Image 1 (cartoon, rainbow, N blue to C red):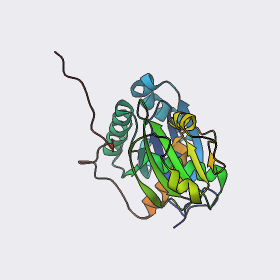
Image 2 (cartoon, rainbow, N blue to C red):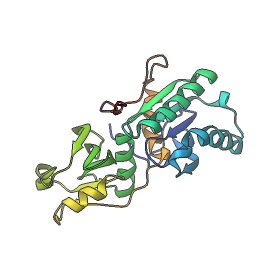
Image 3 (cartoon, rainbow, N blue to C red):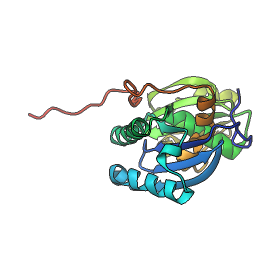
Length: 236
């Protein structure tokens, strides 16, 4: 099933969307699959302190209470370990307090949905990239219907990475990890590096579909999808 921003979703009520997977955090409120308001915080170190005040503000401006929400959606990873913990903990806490279902959305799929909505290119592949330090990125390959072509994972970039799909397809590379890949890649006509800013609003059609399908996360067991284990050097 193709998910598009341009098609109005059937009734899903109010959904609050939270994304803190990267340095840019955001909260979006939507009703019936249509964006009402989005607030962005570009200070990663402030995510823990800023999310609740932003949520309170966005609900107040919309004239609704947390109890009026129909669901809460969260960007579930991959991304920053600290950022993901903040977003998921906030979403789970609010879902528990307000007794609302929790919807978990892949950060990479959310990004692919956002870029597809910008380009509208149905024949291209979409490769979101989240910086994972050095020459590594969290990435995946999607087609325009958001079908996974290459499974999400942590990938070390080399000049030959993605060479097979670039032989056959126009490919959009984007996200905060795309710049270092662009530096490695020789000029290729099929490779495009459009400007992209991550936003919780890009979850809207994905969360609406999940709500209609009753595809909810288990509050007791759900955790961020880090894609690789967190490494912390032991003290000597």
